[in-house]
Length: 321
Figure (cartoon, rainbow, N blue to C red):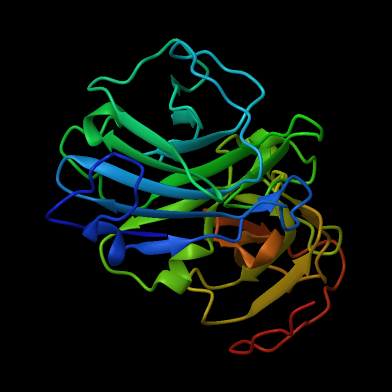
């Protein structure tokens, strides 16, 4: 998703008729907990100026279930929530939720008693087809003390669609993990400035950990090329993983082998012995979303342990498995 700079920010009145929204990137295609089309449509737009990030949301809804509440009180009702990570540190998320009556809840990480400072704004309005939302989130409130922090922010946009007669339907702009739980939706990437919207809209961030015991082989380890088994942390929202191994850190050079698998483990075809190898992986999530590649890690194949199979000649790229 791309946020474009505007000179005149939208008025936070939930009318969605400001000129700032006319040139903003638009995103929809929400999914429910089963990563299928939800019953109710949701569309959101985003822009920014030098002080704040602005979001507008259009929610189709045949029945509003909501009421005015004290700040930070939550209930099973209609609401929209935006979660942002501005500094690239997963877990350092800020949450901004507003129900259809306009009551607000904000939290930082797990602290639901945290209140943004400076404060953020939100307005809602009931329409003939549902309800609309506008939000203004100051950059200072999410730790962006110098304005926009360079690079993409991580963003989740979540919705609760509640009915008195049917089960509440949760939906998300980005896909959910296999467990079908609200907190497993992946983070989408929010870019500031010009970028191809089609490319940016389906980019997500893996929950990749830096803990070394989650990875096999260990970084810099020497391994038997015949019995090598590789593993990395499970990504809840992954439908498949793409693994690359190469004897060049550039991957586009030398001998490169690629695998597409649906579990975070792989026993590759035995690699040539006595070489330094570089490896990385990325995930593809439900709905065609794709992450960037992981950190590059290395290992060395020993000269003992049997004669490995030559999978390709140097300079070639092995076919994808």
